[in-house]
Length: 250
Image (cartoon, rainbow, N blue to C red; front, side):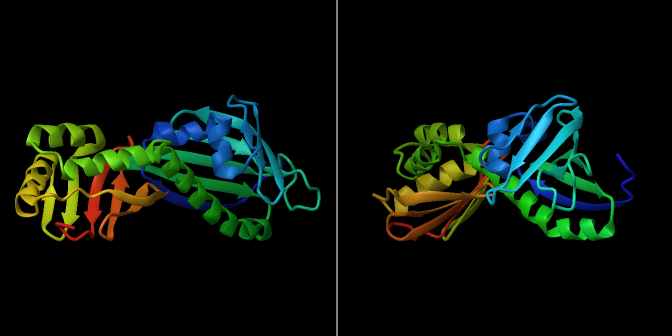
């Protein structure tokens, strides 16, 4: 490979542990969630990676380094000879640094000319956003609706032990709850608060209305009575923050 004196660098925080983020370079199904259907990886030094963009553009490369869950290096070039980078003509380095509540992902793309570098700045801005979104979808899981519905049953559970059991399975110990009648931090405070709500607003039993939607680890849904809820997922898929715009007693 010829010298690659020019590079671009971008960083993004992804709210998931490094092991999960790195797994997108080790599993073709996850890699395809990021790049597009048909994208594949052979996760070994010298193994091929193929990116198939939704617009039918194809990129090929080979892994030069795999150091899970800290670093991955691969070559990057286009199948189409009219594109500015031939196969093997550039190098991408991705490093993962553990952070509180997630991972700092830093990408550096080394290229031969400043013109080619500049044409890829917006593309990587977009693709790193896609990466974060794809990881968030994995955190949400296939059972997202069932977990949301189960979480809402804590608002009508008749006793503290039952509320605690429901919440322990679904939220972090440090969960934050923000709603019109309270600002609570921690599982035990939330358990007590939900009991107080039942005392002053008896009979409340919020239920999800329509689908829950997820974006970058945040979940939005509507509940009966016209309430809007926003959940923040932690790196293990549990809920770390709950904001409810629902009116108590509705």
